[in-house]
Amino acid sequence: MSRLVLDENLSPRLVEAFRAAGHDAVHVNQLGLDNTPDEAIMTWARAEQRTVVTNDRDYHALLRADGLAGPSVIHLSQRGPDGLVGTEAQRRRLLEVLPNLEADLRRGAAVVVDRVGTRTTPLPWHNRVRPERSPEPAPARPAPADDRQRGGGPDSPERVRQRQHHRTGLGRDR
Image 1 (cartoon, rainbow, N blue to C red):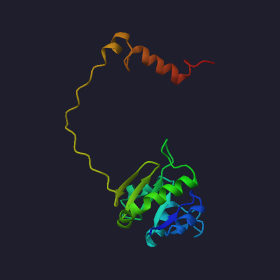
Image 2 (cartoon, helix red, strand yellow; image 1 turned 90 degrees about the horizontal axis):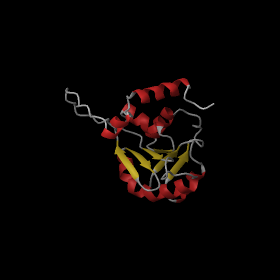
Image 3 (cartoon, rainbow, N blue to C red; image 1 turned 135 degrees about the vertical axis):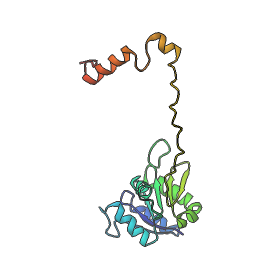
Image 4 (cartoon, helix red, strand yellow; image 1 turned 90 degrees about the vertical axis):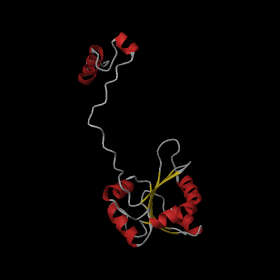
């Protein structure tokens, strides 16, 4: 059983569906937390040991930026061809994946769910440190032979003129 708080960008009708499936679910509107900043909802969810379910990517950004260990957040992605659009699609998919997410959510996780998959990042969400680069600049790659022959490389005089005309509006049809 998951303890969920649904963000205001999700339908309150989802609460009943999750409760009927045995989950402890509430909607921010029921709590008087509608029109409340995301940070305050996260603070409430952490204190109540609830997972935030949202369509809003800002929650994951807050977890990452602040290095927070909780609360867990499930982002229902609506982007692209695999996005979860509509209350019924969100209900079906979340009820399908919640049993497999239980342990991760208890430990603390940032989860993205779409129609075909889930991506889980354990919390706290530390930005990975990139290895230091060598001080030597990478060698310049020559433009492909066909671009050089046509004079169509990115810095060719013709391309520079095209960019200038586009910026000034001279190259636009009127």
